[in-house]
Length: 292
Image (cartoon, rainbow, N blue to C red):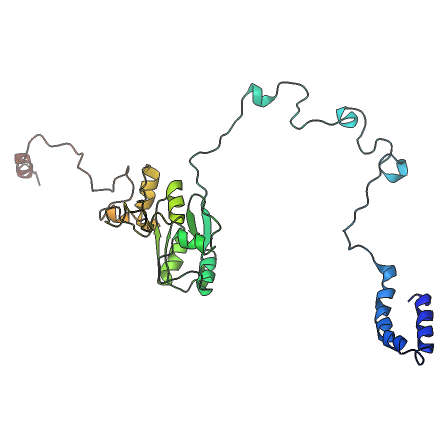
């Protein structure tokens, strides 16, 4: 504590009996004891201040003479522009740029099971109604939908509420966890325009059958006025025809057939074997001419 504060307190104590105001200030002066004692020890937090490197101040500093730039050359005398190749014609000009951006790649918004269960526990999602990307976006379970929603299995052990969820894609572990809890997963195809309409309430993604009478409406006052499109590319059609992916088009696959449009299930196509020239009589003749 500074000695000047001690002398001031001693003077106040001597005049405390004569002046009632000084007796009122004594408790506040006692509280200031700690504040006065730390004034000389104030400093920045460790790492809050970095000392500036002073270059060219002699060899003892470690950054004198060449100041850390080395000897001669362009890097000592100036700066080298980014991508500079010494003055020659750049290689990307001579040989062209390699690689490309895949225009067919999609960026799915991930949705994990632990987050779904947390939103159900908070009452922000209603498990008694189908959960679509509109409910996920309105409840802020998803902060925007990119090219679709993919259901992932992080926190699969936490899911305990049966829910009916409709997403773009789903992992095998997520499907198993939802169905083990008594729920169901349905994957549906969305285009960028259909995602925009679903989020705005102009389309209903819970209608999975295109032939349904409620799939479209000419009245814009109804909650949905546009029917969602179906996939047109072979890759998307085969994905949503696959029962393993819980695709909404899996009911179109006949029993015993696979979801592929190219490969046929064995023993389901026409026979391609050569026909015998003898007809039905050759079988009888072959049986009669047997030696044993």
